[in-house]
Image 1 (cartoon, rainbow, N blue to C red):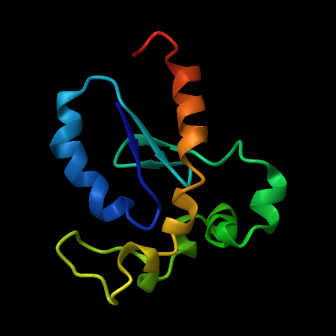
Image 2: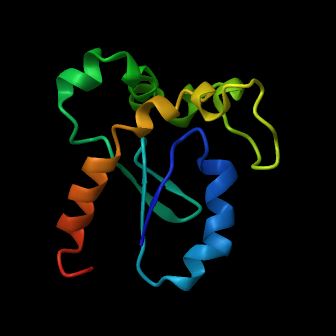
Length: 122
């Protein structure tokens, strides 16, 4: 099983998954936009293999560049998603979260990394 998340949501959403859904799976991989250890779990940077030119120049990677430089300290309180029960602050929904600009860049790298790590899994 793989779980895709982002640094702006990790602290509010991953603990719930670890205590519920992921308890049912002995093998899982957690991907995000920042490589780190969180609650004893290894979180893999899904974007590390994306072409450097995109990461250095594309506006969608502004948050990623800050995260690589300063880690979790780069996140401002307004960028954090907050508890699942907290409504979005505006009508644009998840698009208002800066981390969602990075999300579209994660899918193919996650698939490639998952196949590399577990080529025998379905």
